[in-house]
Length: 302
Image 1 (cartoon, rainbow, N blue to C red):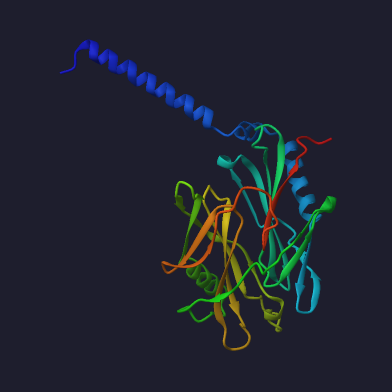
Image 2: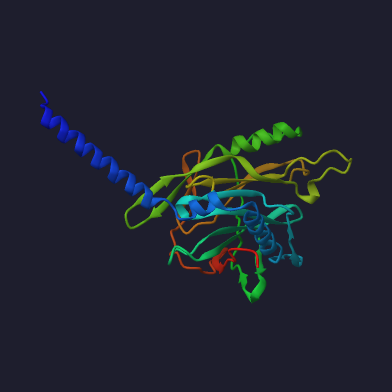
């Protein structure tokens, strides 16, 4: 039975624990959360303009079997997100296409430098979705040249017969995507692994130019790009569901995968691992088919 003194002591201990937890939570909050909540409309518009300018100044060249070809930037970002645990409070995802298919995706993220937790910076993360090598040029003379294809398509067994009805085709692609799952290795030294969350709505659909109907009917999507995330909706892994040879009478479903993270990834199809990439050090590097780097970000309009 508790005495009055023991109840008083228990109450005091409980209060101290609660105070400590509140302090820990306050310390753990990303410093950008305040900046995000207090940013004016003009400041947000300025960031949006900067991201567009950075995307529009990026040149993507695919080295196809027919020679070098310039890919076209999709007019608007295909996705927007934030990621407070990583101090990213405003980010856009841009796509470049060639003959309809995506060949490059690039994240442009507004955040802060983790070395001092104050200096505003951009994080640029680009990955190839091309079956060929790509060259990428940015303002300021920065250049990236991939050394291998970004996507290697593999056939999906037991896929549905592709429908010629739009809503059914879309449903088929979502159902195929739902057969995939992934884990992310956050820290290989401790074995920290996390199951990823699939984003059920595709980031983009596309129609390959040669697959567009000649009779003026609305085009059916040839494929779709799906994503999986570890934090919120920040895409770390990408899954492409693609219909090969849809006009040849023997169309088959294929998939491809790509990364935009230093963390290790393991992709599973029907519970069997079908694609893996290792953890890499968090140092900007021109990897074989993807890269990332940082640049200084202007905080306010000049």
